[in-house]
Image (cartoon, rainbow, N blue to C red; front, side, top):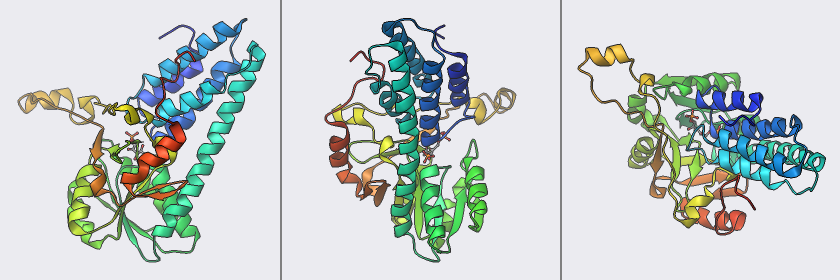
Length: 317
Ligand SMILES: O=C(COP(=O)(O)O)[C@H](O)[C@H](O)COP(=O)(O)O
């Protein structure tokens, strides 16, 4: 890694890579804070060196995981704040934009939660996939409104993020039933809403989220169960406005099966995609802090927020 990258930034990058820090919003928060540390601890003596250090840190953070667009969106937000002409001024700029970003992220999640909660009625049962802080914000707000909500939680192989969801729902007082992923269709009859998060939302309204989301959405549509995606606007993917596609992360196959067991069963090829793409026709609503949108209309919001597209977060202005 580039030697200009501060050890704390390297640690954050490592934590994201190994999924100690995971989930699109949490990753965004962590990288914004890491850039702040890089800025505060910099001993650069001229603005150009300082800017180059920050860009190197952003690159190191960006190289960790490719799918959650909240990561480059966060980097871009913080780096765009650099407008001063002295090192001290630039340090202040980064601290301020990092703080502002983290506050906006928290506020967006709270506001989105209230919008999502309005879709949930007293007595509703939801089904979740993976662990999404945006999705859980909707449940939390509904519970705060005095609604009784129950949840069927998919374990989400291979890393079982469903366990985190189960624990956090239990902490809210929501009764939880944990199921294996393949039992989802069987239990959809008992469910009023499928509620998931997003790592990225493309300009055509496709939702990129944990592998298994698209199959769940197709099954939910077949059963007539509405599917709601909780996604603050930080997850909107500006590159898709100009025809770019979203990279789907392929993770280590040892997450699925260890090498010795793989050899015992005849050394099959193993693949481990972390995310999939749910086409807009399977999504009923994308819930953001700016209100809820049918997926096909998300492009209008994206144009409003990003114009016609954006460059890499570390590109020279
Ligand atoms: O798919 C995942 C996490 O995948 P992983 O565990 O591989 O990071 C989550 O649904 C989204 O990131 C949204 O999360 P949030 O709403 O918290 O941003």
